[in-house]
Length: 238
Image 1: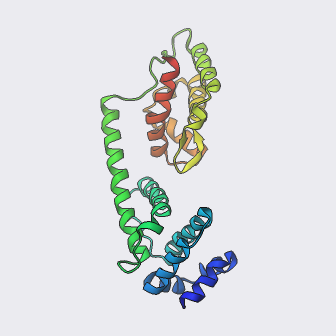
Image 2: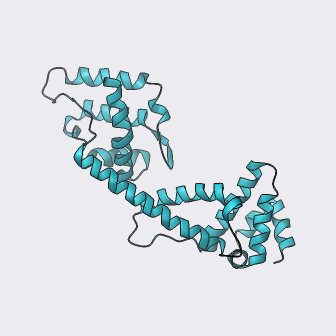
């Protein structure tokens, strides 16, 4: 493939999709300095930032479909990998045009280098978060014990507080934007109302129920809810 042929492909969304089915050509692009330079120049020549991002997104697809995107290895959990991958794609979109040097490394090597850094970032953040939770567990404060007379009435009052909050629905889970704090808190309060034996947030059944409903890893859901949603809820009670 020549740089001119590659430029013609980049002009056509249909041709780009066809190219993604040809792994040997994708690897040729990744491993060729002249083709990498052509990709970079094409991106830089776009006057519309949206069009530039579309091509950079296509470059990420080239890395994925070529089979050269690093998969994280057996020691990296899927939660950590997916979060790091999402962050790295966003970073790649912002920085490819300005920072990538096609003469120094292949596109996949450059992408994977920063993916490894993002995995370290996410791992460190989770470790720090877990330490904070050990010292100051962010549970919902002052939940009445189930045998108290006002238990269900209190849960219903809290449910209305959450329902009427304009901010909780704007706090969404990264990579799972269909999950927000308002939905989660209402579900948790409903579970508390109907099933008092789920009241302890450390009970794994609570997170299994919610994870199954939202199709989200339970550990990620629990981490998001404890660090973001419970804190927002306590702010409503203050």
